Length: 246
Image (cartoon, rainbow, N blue to C red):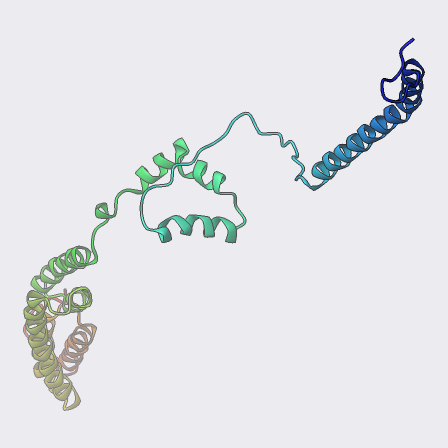
């Protein structure tokens, strides 16, 4: 048995009492540790839950297997925006426009339409029309058909108002029309005075100038008929002179 050197107390008894006191406090210490550990775990769980609620949710989207990538040519921003705006305004997907433009038939149709240079320009077309009209005008003028010559010269000047050849042919035509007019005027004057020979000659000359003149043909026929009537009355038929009405 051990005694304390200072007070002489039994050290064994004191040690037993300290051990008993130490053992009696152990359950409280374990409980306190467990409680603290539970609080830490609870706080950690609340923190993780808060982070999960505040984090953005990721929604899975099904991506099609075949993706079409459209090449945009380099250029100004306006050049790129125009197809997009057109697709939105016309309510047509841009992919449809792309496939329609690059379809095999689209290139064939574009080839059939031809390049802009393949179509004749307005200047060349007008020159060709004027030249064709002038050929017909010259041919009819040589045949003394002034009405058809007048028609074709008017068409030539409508196609090319400044065409010098058409202006020269028109000047020749106007001169012949004036000559026909003078001859017809004298033929009418002679017919009113009953001078059928004068009327016949002037109408025949007018018909030679313009074979298409209906007025000259009628006056010539009238003068010949009047001469035949006068010859029948006088029993003195005029000399047989044939005048062509063609």
